[in-house]
Image (cartoon, rainbow, N blue to C red):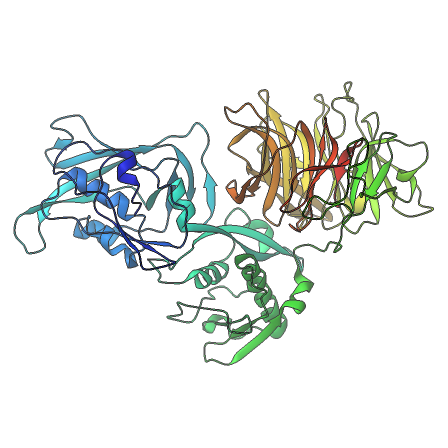
Amino acid sequence: MGADRGRARGTLPRAVVVLGCGSLLVSGCASMPSSGDVHSVSASQRADSQVQVYAVPPRPGAEPNEIVAGFLEAMTSDDPQFAMARQYLTVKAAKDWQANQVTVLADGPDPQPNRSGDRGADSSGFTFTVSGKPVAVVDKQRAYQPAKPQDTYSQTIHLVRQSGPDGTGKEWRIDALPEGLLLGQSDFQRIYRSVNKYYFAAGQNQLVADPVYVRQRTDPETQMNLITQTVQSVLDGPTNWLKPVVASKFPSGTALKSDTKSLALDDRNALKVPLNERASNADDPQCRRMAAQLLFTLRDLTTTRIGQVELDRANGSQMCVLSGNQAETYAPEHMPTTPGQYFVDTTGHVERMRADSGSDSSGGGTDSSDGSDASVVTEPVQGPFGKGEQQVRTVAVSRDEKRAAGVSADGKALLVAPLAVGGELVHTPVTSDDRDAKNGGLSAPSWDGRGDLWVADRNPAKPRLLRLAQGTGEPEAVDVTGLNGAQIQQVRMSADGVRIALLVSEGGHTTLRIGRVERTEDGDKKVVSVRELRPGAPQMEDVTAVSWAGRSRLVVVGKEIGGVSQQLRYVQTDGSTSAAGTLPSVNKLTDIAATDDDRMPLVAHSQEDGIVRLPPGANWKTAVKKGSAPAYPG
């Protein structure tokens, strides 16, 4: 329980905070007065996940305001089964209350007594209204669902008098309350962390990240540690949003063997996972895929290199073992170890920067007379895009770096060419009739991990999202549900090919939406559509550029709601803010490019500084003074 809360937003019950790095005990606020208003419960400013918090029980004779404040504060604790929190409830309410859903409020819950009658009192008890600015709800599947900017939160807590523990007297207790936990944003960030769990793309051997939130310490309800919670979450299956396009290889009903609470890596960084009877009959190929789901999940959970995952039957016998190297067959992406960094030069041709040139963590290289990094090596790509008369204004390179797609300088034609000597330029059937193609026309194209090429026609008279299977042939118009009149401005496909990031304009603002790519069959024809768009950066009202920067992470450039300056930050595909937070800004960014490998630098275009790069742990530095449309493969 936050020791700073009482000082910030009113007086709260006494609390105990245990610091994970030592045995220091810090008491909370001073004793609670027996009367007076209930004040807002401010979100704690502490974000240290090593802090362990234990609540205290209600004092005898506590007034309703103390009971409400104490219960809300006890929700932030680590007490097993929330035992102390339940002491603030009636016997029935304590039995019925479940803490498997979390409502996140920006500044924490603000309880106020209803003003009708005697300071909230009524014939049946005492009522408080709890309000706050909602940030998100983490549902029973552990999935994060961001709130809309216009949303509000208002629920009631009702108290009645009941006999005390010794059967005498009357004590105020809560008999009706909102569902789940109510946490301030900083308490939520202290208690929970985002984890990618993995499932197979439908009909593919490629894994797809499915982000969820798990408790960083032992879960009070299940008593499972972090690794065990995460493994169980994988076994529970994909979240509802991703479920239509992925599949789990674990048989239905698979769970951890009874009473498994504390899974841990051994001294070889291997994990042994005991499963129940439902999984015991899986054959070796299926078992290895099951293990791959867990291995990649654990890799995202810890910085430790996972040696292997062993799955055991309910009787204790070994079912299969999968090593880290063997799991690479199912990797979520297959990218070169040093992917190229591409851009369009001032003549409209495509050049490649060596990925490692001038990108050391200290800033690297020396400055040339024009202000660029003199150590950056650039050269025209091989093939038609690197020379000749054809000019392009944007470029996308296939993930195997064998082909590139570009939009013509006038914005009206989509072109494809090999990145090899002697390759021929192909004018695809994709064209735009946009009268203002200089500012509209075709968007920058994007390749998914399956080899398909995507582009949006921004012609307001005929807006379309188009896909060319394997980058060739006739384009397919892709139906996008949920646009409701908004127009697509940018397209960025994920490596797994089942998620799409779209910048859409509506009402004078451009926002980020994440869609699910569904592939179905209509007779002999395969139909691809985008379904269930959801906000990707709900805290931003104007997004200028976006790029995938991880398996469930994007980097966005834009302005926050009510803000005036351009921001650069990481966001998760579920709409939550990445732990990496805000990045150093640079003037007037128009494009951004990243890879799933966070060891590679961000590459961007600045209207003032040209092509700039941000290596890990360093500052932005100009790589090429004059150029535009930076791109990594994808």
